[in-house]
Length: 560
Image (tube, rainbow, N blue to C red; front, side, top):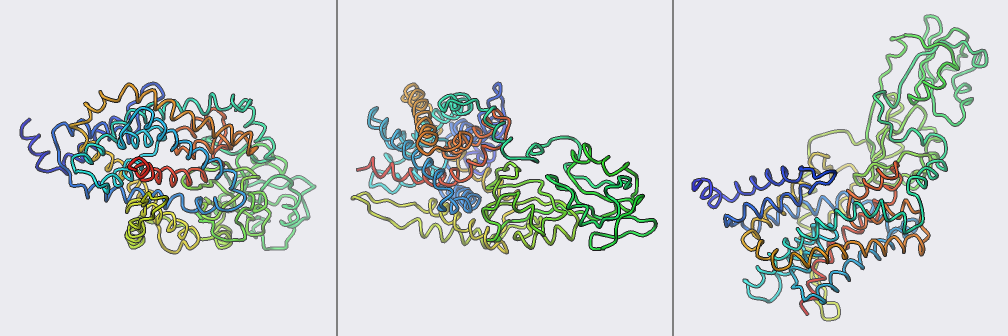
């Protein structure tokens, strides 16, 4: 045992990896339907291993924290700048109101209960599920003109308050938003979602299909319906109303021809039809019997992710895009915005920077990709010039200090990395020829980067954690509960009764503004709809920025 302890003390990198392993294990444990999550798991594991008095150089956690912050900005950058447009102003206003209320709650309780700066920052980080505050507030404390021992004590109080209030705040909000939130607005969440889906029009019922069958299929039918004979492919497709189905190829005897041909289809011809799976099932026999014709169906299909960058499609609905010439034969299997899957309904609007997953014949998909934006073909390579330069420039910007009413405010180098991540993420959405960070790399930078940082925070705070928890634990439980609920109550009432927003969007916006993805999932599960995600991405982008910025602002105000 002494050998292991000495190995951890003399080689702190081993302690870090042990913390990560234990943290992910703790984070995956289930208590009913609730789990701690890997971030809190890594904090607790760090505290546990930190009891051995492990010393980790401060620069190590800063490196991982900067990677995490830059990646966060990279993901939400397009939506952050979109929030400046007129159609996103209600969501932006709700986010600002909710986040300002968060800051006021933390300041109010700190003054009322005489919390020190570290505890107040931990309350802000935990009750509002914004782990980045731990880093930005800690950096702000390090810049204060205080003895090093006092600064260290304040910084060690941050994870103590964070651990207590995060558990309380996250658990209660995951329950509160889907269960109590609708009652504050006087609605039944499931009924409201069903009504919204009904208004969306034909085709929305296919959203979220999880059947073992393919979402889209190409099948061969022998034409026996006399209404369909002696017509060209273009004329036949024009007969279809409210359904997207396309004839890709035709066999007439031994001759095969495609859509470009002006030949007319005769009785007995076999046609290859691409449509959604449920359209084949419900209406395929209108054409005639389905037949087996492998040669006819040997059509090269492509599944391709496309980053929407064209100005001409920004803000257009899927119904509008489906009418475009380039959309013929092409289907949308998934729409992703800032890593969140959007509902696929005719009314859903596409934003620049969205990732559209297209399915269809190879030539048609390539043509659509050219019209929509930039094909995001899979690669394992990360543009590290982009990442390194972004963090460097962001750090230089973040170190600048602005004095407001006598209070020196700075983003800090890490906050600057977040800001430059926003800019670079937006640039990537507009000019996607460079700056690619594949999804696996994003997961490493985002999840592992944050967990490494939090784990190292736990290692440093370990020796004083238990004493701090005993001193403030009981009061922090009650404070964390109230602090997490009040801003969301204010946000719901403001969004519904002042801004007159759709209740589903209000709940999604509150989950986004509070940066609580688990709450969004709970709302969607309760509503049995993904529509609340439409209100999540813009508030999530703004909420990340504001709540992160509150860390140094809180320290600046309390240090006066």
